Length: 390
Image 1 (tube, rainbow, N blue to C red):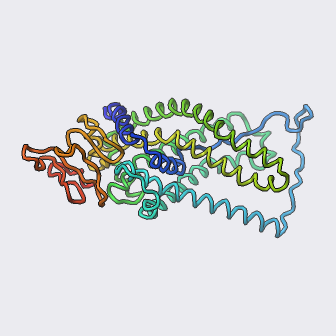
Image 2: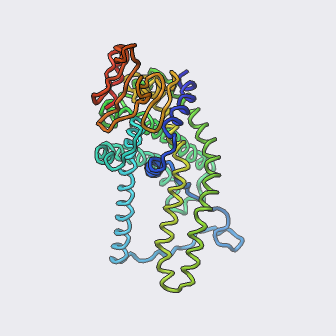
Image 3: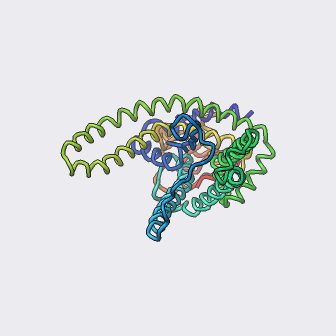
């Protein structure tokens, strides 16, 4: 099955894409991964149970709670704080959604251009963000509305049976499971479909749904394998992140102690130092996690292209790893398609890759599958997938 065979190919493509190590390119990819969500996650909501009063007994009746009076000033402050939080969430959400397309473009072309990619993919990112926001809101409503009527007001908690609580937990698990699957399929398959066919989110979902229905076993197996691999890799990477984060934090802690000793001015400088330290740790975590994110995305692209050649965004990378070709560096290929004179297929600085394909004895491009050497795109009369390279 493709989902099994493509695991090995994804490792090869990821290795070729990331080696030899280019520090600038790795840092750019780390920034992209940080915003697309590869460097962190959501913290589960914690609930407290047991003795809420600390007296050793559980009260039979809820005690009255003295809520602060909502004066106009308090309401204004709360509204301002809510507006700030909402704005930050929208900005980061749109930025992360847009960088999903930047990541796909980088994995296709071999070069990472964040600023130009943001400009050219902003509208796609906005549409993807809106879809994600609606999906998340719908999930919250499906769980929150039943929970509201079951546990509010708070004095109804004593009358709720364990079976009712169990049903609510089961509903939350099912909703989260469906949300996680839809979210993953959207990120790893619908986003590439949007790029391949220049579609919106819903239209791309409709296009991908046809492929999904035709290959259900492949995508079920993909979800199982990618989950297992991701969990196993995340355990090892998580331990490495903790160790590296501790080492990164040491100099910031030392400087912080020195600032405290300076007095009031030092305390004032602790805030930017803490922010800088936090960003440094997040960047290092994203840098460590970046290869796993790239691997998962390449794995998805390989499965998508194998199950639907019309949506194949990386036909040449797929062909290279399956025919024994390899990379000279991050932007060039070596192997059967090398130029007979220079031994290199370095990419030029024009709008597309400058490839040379298999050659005849006279050194001219082979008519069957050869790439044009001077134009902005592939010249392959045998393939309908090459139009995806632009």
